[in-house]
Length: 296
Figure 1 (tube, rainbow, N blue to C red):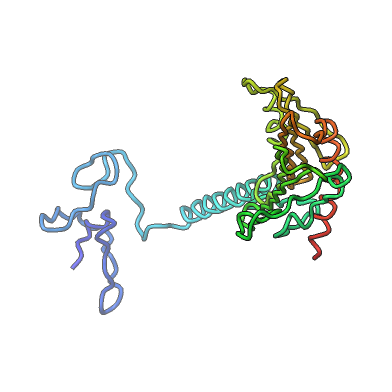
Figure 2: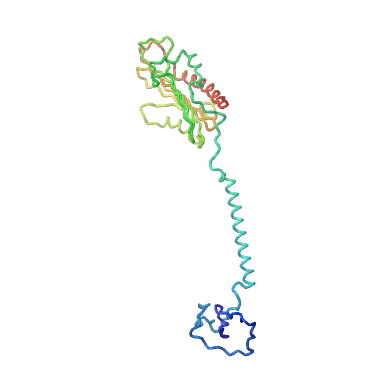
């Protein structure tokens, strides 16, 4: 049975009478506190046993979430949802503008394709015109074959290289000389090589060693190209070391000439300037072939 004095307690509301609604008395007598009744937790400033303090309004009867409170709560939820949607739209715009939705940049390979045999694509005509020929094989083992080529396709790089040992036409067997051509081509599929390309070749000039190098830009080859030439040290031996580096999009190509000849050699080696011309002429044709190899 419910005690009428418990009406101020929201946790102890009257239960429906099994035989119908019983009208409340007109002048109810305040009930005494039931020492065995469950006491509600404090609702504000201490008033004793869960009752409001003197001068404070009592909590309204009825279930929590009255219509007025519900309206204010719904308005708050709508503002929160609207703010989240606006923030998401702004963040999405930033990602779209900065390429945030793309996991990686698209490589600009400038039409170049991979080939497993770079030697087959290398133009040797300029070397032949300078009276050089491919040196004959010295054995049957694969390590003694000439020229040598290899390549590898990987997730970030496609690499190709070709090494050729050269000798002068009609050179004497007693001549102590060595001439090598090293060609490499790389397709960069994850990272643009442009920011570091020039500095990589310019760094030759910064080397503090006994051997000095001259670096110069080469116009007309790819997006940018550089020629590195070793300065003559004035020794009794004659030789040259020349590097040609080319970048076209995300493709890089390097052709290196390294030669050595004794002063007693019967043949006259080309000068560094002559070698530079040979490398540039060969690179121009070789790069055209590499672009065409993509369709093969």
